[in-house]
Each structure stands twice: as structure tokens, then as C-alpha cells.
Image 1 (cartoon, chains in turn brown, purple):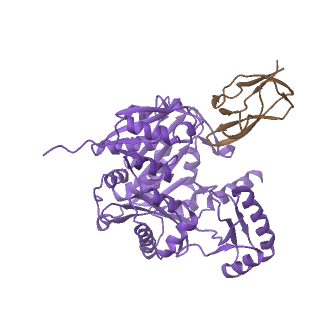
Image 2 (cartoon, each protein chain N blue to C red; image 1 turned 45 degrees about the horizontal axis):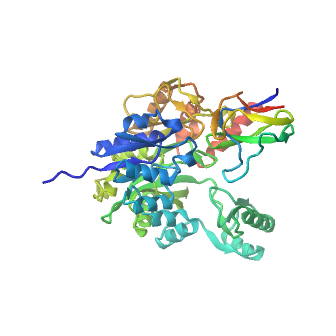
Length: 77
Length: 456
């Protein structure tokens, strides 16, 4: 199954800001290039974009936790 | 005679400034309590403190920025004082207020003073009242006609600024009369969208100026003194890279005027604690920009050239004691430079480089001081800022300080993350920098020139 890896080491966020909704939820259909989260590295924010289209079946990284380079963040089907 | 009550300070911060405050507290017989998030559980400041309190998960807004958690940690650990360090809650008036309401002493100025200096318009008014020169500018302009009238007085180039703006946002540069009208309407739209307030004002754009700031400290007995100035002109995107004290080539007259102005401003607001008054300096003219109501990253160079421990002075003031020195006793000795060693890659547009410090060997030797929150094996986590260490050098004169800087930076070994060390070595060797007196645009112009030559 395809996955979406993080291109950077940092902190993964599922929301654009603490008081807003998540970019996507499990079960959502997404397109290639769609933003699914943010990666923060020391106050620099980079959008995490889907590398393929599909349905998000699972997030492998908790909101606001650390990710390493290449670590899979979400699984698609 | 009974013994003095134990003073116990909660250090509401992390990294090198937490280590710095703990050391200062211990050196004057106080106890120190550290706080930490999940990510910082095994940190150096936790090990150095008398007690440590966990205040929340790794994201700063859920730990170091959580006022409830920090104040509760201070109360639970029996603290009498709270030192905010710099960044995080240091300049949040509500934090100072909450600390006071909890029956604790905030190590810094009052919430009211933090508030009035944090508001640009009010700080500017206070400076004018104290007879401190401000950047020539207008009041709030209502429409393009008002802007044209103001621009005629101020002259070009000028900046259009959102009255409600901050942090460099909502600023536009206008270089000629025919650009003004368009810039005003765009700026008004932008300011309304960003801040919910379309008010604008105009200010002269001071280009090619130096950033020079004055360290002041006031106590509760009505004393306000200055500890001379620092030159912080080497900047990238308004972020300081290295700092120097005293400012090279500053005339004695200008030094007297600028330090005098800083003291007048601090006295005007009844300032208590350590603070910094920042100026732009153009030739022999200077203009107030803002006041930072806290200890700053670059305070060690001032300590090196004046022989005073500024954090100890902060603690003395907070305990109601008079300053340990009078103005006449504060003299300049030699030259000091501070280099911020950040986990950033200058080759990749300064992109952060978190990771484990697989090896961290700080330099030492005569006139060398390194302030860091880390030891070998520590981790630079992506949640906070990228400062690994501050390498501070002191020499009898600028030549000796620069020689010591080259040696110290060469000795510094950091493995596991990319740092700005090599960039600093190249700056120390740069002829223009060595000549002294570079301006705030110098570093970026130098970088652009070097990009062009690499392409050519």
C-alpha cells in the first residue's frame, strides 16, 4: 500500500493551527499534491503533501509528535 | 539575628538561558527550580537545578508557553521568584501579572511597563516625552491625500506600516512619489485582512544604518544605570548573527548621547530590572526603535566588557536590593564578541538541522566563554529554537578579540548537526567586518555578492 513519508525531520501537525480542523481525516479521499499536514522544524513550517492519490486509511504518527526523514506518516489505499 | 529566608527561583525557560540563570542563582546563594517539557526531560538545566518540574508535552504552547502550568510549578515547588529568561513568556504582560497575583516576585519589570513598551505607538510616545529621538514619521494617515502630505514632510524612501502590525509584518517600502498611492491602498487592504485594522502610518526608511543597543538596569531605589552599548548590525532577515561590545568606531560624543538617551527612557517609565533600548544609528544621528524588557541573548558580551554579572543584578533588583554598582564604577574594558552557533545550514538558506549532538567539544582558553544548554550526546529537538551554543570571546582590544574568536571557533567541534560555525569563521576573516562599523544590510548584501560570484 502506498504511504506518505515525511521529507524532513521535525514535528508533524495535522491542523493548520490549534483551533482549526484537521487537514484530512481517516477515510478521506485525497488527491496527489494535497496538503495533509505540516512539518515544523524550529519554527519553520513546511506543508506535507500527498505523494499519491487514494483514501487515507491510517496515520502512523500522532499529531504534534516528532518524525524523522523518510518516516511514513500516513497510509493510503 | 535570624538567617535570611531562602530565596528560590523558578527558571521559566530552557536551554542555555536556563543554565545561565541557575548558575547566577547559585552564585548568590539562591536555590533554583528548573522546568522541562517531555522532550527536555534529560536536559542539562534539569541536572543543574535543585529541583525540576515537568510542565507538559513537547510543543512549547503546551509547556513553556503554558502560563497556568508554569505558575503552578512555581507554587508547588515553594518558589519565591520567577525568572522568565528570554523568549517564551518573558515579554508577556499577563505572565508577569499572573506571577504577581500568585504572590510571587517576577524577575523583571512590572506587567504595566512590559505592556507599554510592547505597544509600538506607546513606546514611541514615551521616547518622545523623554527627549529621545525617534525615526521621523507621521501619525495615523486616513487616506492617500493624508499620506501624500505626510510623505512630503518625511521624504523618501519611506516605510508604510500597519499601526496594528508587529514582527515585521505589514511593512511596505516606498521609494518615489508615484508609488505612494498604490502602496497605501494595498497596505490598507493587507492591514485590514491581517490585523482587522487598516490604520497606517508612515516612517522614514533608514537604510544603511547600524543597529546599536544600550543595556540598562534599574532598581527599586530609583537608580537606573547603563552598561554601555552593543553593536548587533550583522543580521539576516532581522535576526542577529553575532554581536560586539562596545560598538566599533563609535565616537565618545555619540556614545554619551545614546547611553544617556537610553537611561532617560528607562527612568521615564520607572524601569526595574534589566532591559535593552535599541537604536538605529546613521552617521552621528540615532533613532529609538524599541525597548526589550528582558535579559537578551547577547548579554554576555556586556558582562565581559564591564565585569558585571547582569543576571545576578536582575536577582538583586528582584529581591529589593540596590544595584551592586553605580554609574561611575562601570567602565569599559576591552572588546567582546558573541557568535551564535545555531543548528542551521547556511548553505541551504539556513534551514534548521535538528538531531543528536554526537560530539560537542566547546572551546576554552584565555578570554573564551561558552554558554550552552547542551553536552555531548544531547539532542537539538525540532520543537524549539536552533541555538546550540554562544561562543563569547574577550580581548584587550579588537585585534586580540578577533584572534581569540578565530581560535575558539576553530576549536569548537559539533558533530551530528550542521551548524553556523564555518559561517562565523568566514565573517571573522572578512575584511569589511574586520574594518568595523558594518550596517544592518551588510550581511545580506555580502551573501548576494557571493552568490553572484559563484554563478559567474
